[in-house]
Amino acid sequence: MTLVESNFRQLPEMVRFAARHRVGGVIANMVKGGDGSWKVRHHDELAAAFRASHQEANRLGMLLLLPDQIEGRPVPEDFGTESNDRGCPTYLVEAFVRYNGDVCPCNMMNPYTYGNLRRNTMDEILRGVLSRLFDYLMASEAKHPYCRHCYFLRRRTLEDGVAAPRAQEVFFAGSSSPRLPSLREM
Ligand code: SF4
Image (cartoon, rainbow, N blue to C red; front, side, top):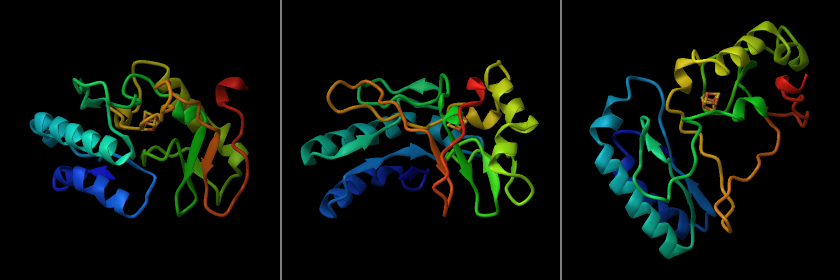
């Protein structure tokens, strides 16, 4: 569920809805784009919705992933899932292909584009200058503005709460092509 200003209060009900329909879990992350000021204004209400949802998920035996921060301000509870706010390993192990062939860094709808599959192969795109530039900027203080306060949530194991390693993934309709090695491994 992507939380926006008009729906975040429905999160506890969404957990109940998912449980009623035997859905295994709910990922609650936050919409990106815009100035994000509504998230700052509603910080306490958002945190209360997270808390209520967490209690419902526990009661119903549901997996629920919640952000550990709201626009960079930590959620003062221990149920938050580690987000990519402080650092991002995700773009190194996945890529996202849009409907039009654009290849982007991740499935958070980051607007940055490495290239397009109608012009180049995936190999050329992921080894190309725009991909390398994104890598370079992410390793500096000048990371892409969209990555600021990122709500990508890294799933933890239920047993020990430690972040589980993600498989290397390409979100690419109609292909089983494996992701290329991380650019940093080249
Ligand atoms: S938006 Fe940026 S920080 Fe977030 S997962 Fe994508 S690349 Fe990483």
